[in-house]
Length: 335
Image (cartoon, rainbow, N blue to C red; front, side, top):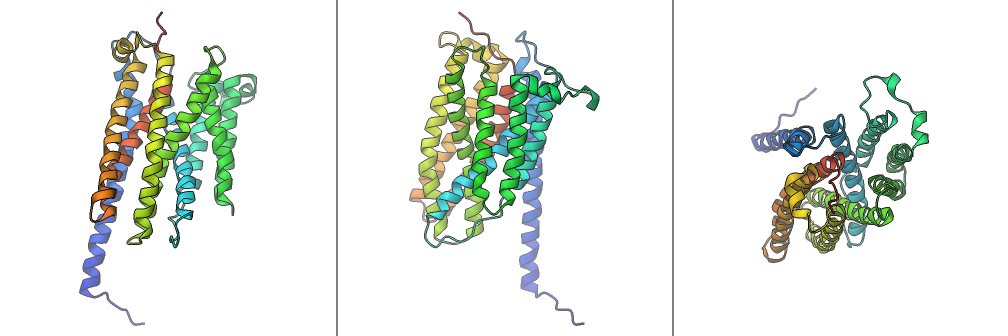
């Protein structure tokens, strides 16, 4: 058997490539660990000095909700960008889908949240404490079951020959989350649920869409379709940002009336976390604007990918903070 040794040039090229891949993996691992610390450590910081009491296991619940939101964003973004890329003439094949993996993560997160609901919103310490049958007896339990089954169905659709059918189970997750966030005891719950549906859908399209756009452009390399796809996404993202901002402001005013919102933004855990989310979204919006300017004016339009990558990290932080926000006690509606 004759062994063919790589030339010096090939060895030099492979070395930086492996180093770059290893460095990227380490960076992703560090970001994941930091993101996990936000929901785990965030409740104590947000609640400090407010006099509010959080539900048991609020850190774990916030982490599970963050995973659930991330598992929703990724496949929604893939479907969205795949549709955009399909309209580009001569576009190469896109990257491998992450949808089956995110569906599995969402399924596990939904199971964990359902176990909490089954015990009366208490963290179970053993399998014997989990009452699966009890989920059918409450509204929150039924919604938790819908999310479990929806992620299971989304995973099966992602592995099928028609991955586009994921749209339906993913839509069920969005509706279930909207209904869960606005119980019937709330004033005008249907209005609140409608706002959440729009807000969550646009946020998922924005976050997951940017992630998959960058993955696709990187896969396409020097193809002329890359800048075209970035341009298409940027135009839609501007509308998505406007919708996220409008529905977020409206929802906040429903939680905290205009004459009390400034006080509650600093004196309640919900308000503090909401303020942190708004600041991060503002920074992400500036990054998006910078990327769009680069896309239009730079000699190399793909240079817009650099600020867009930072934008993805910022959007990931927004997703994690959103998970924390849903686990904290709602602000008191002062009169």
